[in-house]
Length: 239
Image (cartoon, rainbow, N blue to C red; front, side):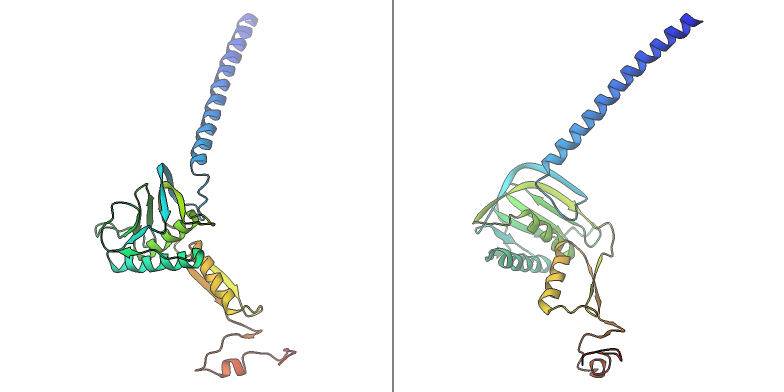
């Protein structure tokens, strides 16, 4: 029995060692795959992280000569928003048309009528010839926020954008940020910048804390007594 036990123990040890080696190999191989996949999209730090993002072959050469293709009202509105963002960040606008372009174009399109995704769902498909932005009007807006994160900060006439296919929809329908102007005063420009940053990161609800026991902080001409009486309390030290 002792010999049998010793033989069984040796066999079990060898079997366990082999199993552990295979397990370690599988673990290392899995890490390698994860690192290789993440390295392909490491330069695309999209916030928030999209549901799906896969790198494609090639690059899209974005320049002043790139055209915007918009064939419906939603596309034309999105084209205007894109040009506003480009003017604000880089100081130029792109020409847009309703005619198809073979290359060097940003194309806006809505989903077909038999496709009913979430209203905020979008697809951003960048390939060497064109950039395709698909979604509802809201979805296209969020696709533009993603595109602006891919564009380089320092644009000097031409930029090579990596070919990529991105599909995204928010996990939560209600995504809010809060700003308290009752206790802390902020200039109008700060509030506008705050809302712009919210849109950039795809928040869709703005919580504006306008009143508390400290006072009412916004003037409504139709209700002047809100500010005449409600702007201060008995403990207020300065009128």
